[in-house]
Length: 260
Length: 260
DNA sequence: CGGATGATTGAGAAGTCTCAACCGTGGTGG
DNA sequence: CCACCACGGTTGAGACTTCTCAATCATCCG
Image 1 (cartoon, rainbow over the protein chains, first blue to last red):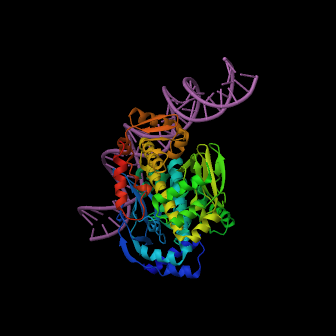
Image 2: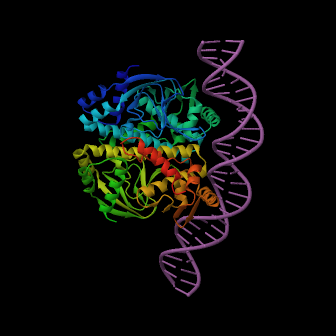
Image 3: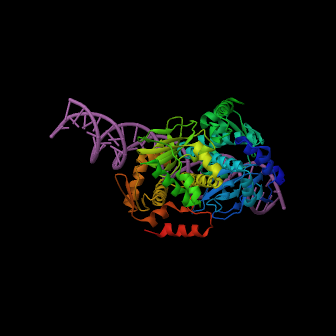
């Protein structure tokens, strides 16, 4: 995977939410950075580290995590190819969190200097970056609601729906069929559950005919059913450009009825 | 409470994390907006609403919430005077969440038009706003870790420590003594617990000599002890300017040793 | 074949929830 | 001045979800 391909995915992600001129798009594509790969479970950024670059995922899956004193981890976000894990490190370069590789992951380290220059040359990019971070924060808030107010079954169903929509938007499968190289133990760290309980809950979703899994492939057999048990409404992903609310409501309708 | 006083608090909050020139500070103070008040439990912004203003808290406490289908709510953030609840609505004007009044609350509705003009005139303000939103997201991530990986006692202890530091930083008391006009039921909605369990847990913290409460006043009798049970480390509040990591580590040391 | 990783199973323990009731205080109206 | 009501805090007992610990199984890979 080359840096260029990753930057194209990144631009594509930005365009999901922001309108950018050709010139601004060119500025994104002209970014560059050192490419490195990480094995699963290796930390890419450790908590408290001061960084002068942002981490763009080119291949694999990365996650933001918070670590407790006893070593337990809470994953606060999953990043798929095209996601810039810590774009906000531009404005807050000392991370209070860490980034870890979930599966084998390729990262492009884009220097802050380049990103700052792009922002200075094209102020609209700062707004696009801010909007991108706002979308991540919106996902975080939704996860909080899931952890606080939904049981294990709804939580698992919700994250599967979320991955479906995000994978599809990133061109990495359809919302009902995609590869998810995440172990049940890692899912447990994201859902605030025990690996054992994730296992039993996944079995239940399978038994109910909602999903089918094999190796690390997910197939959602009953999208409407899964979305209903998850109370899933993709509005929180903020897949809508600034140009008004009309597009957004259409999006919800699509997501909750299609392919079921 | 006047709009001017609220804007001064807002500027003060921005200066906690960003360096702004006198001119930029002036641009903040020249903002204005319609002032209105809300009774407790009244919604200020309803989920899905399209807004063309941001909500600045002048007095009282507001909260961002996510609502489940059965009516249960999860609070995802508390906003104290000087906090701009939904600054990010500038870049994502259709809210996926709601804002509600926790106590009697005064809100200044600052039009997006004014904020956009300020950003256009002073690009550095966009970065300050983005940084402010990043701090809110960082708090959100920490809450997620609390919900996912800490028990009720640690969660409650953590939110009390957080309020202590934030209240002190906002000039609304000291970290060990402040007014907190939030009912146990509302705390439960933030902590992902039942009001009954919040009550029992609060009793336990009192019995352990960690805190003392009366009416809606909190006194933290043993800061070090409370911080230890909460695994509280204020680094996640991002109370550090861009000027390097030195100041930050000092801050942690202070917060975990002082006033205990 | 051995070792590592991830998925699966079982049984008992623990934390939290549910429901229902009761108490104390402040405000309101007769 | 008192009766009443609303609200928030408190208590008790039983139910339920999820955790803990420990073991087993399946697959991949060297």
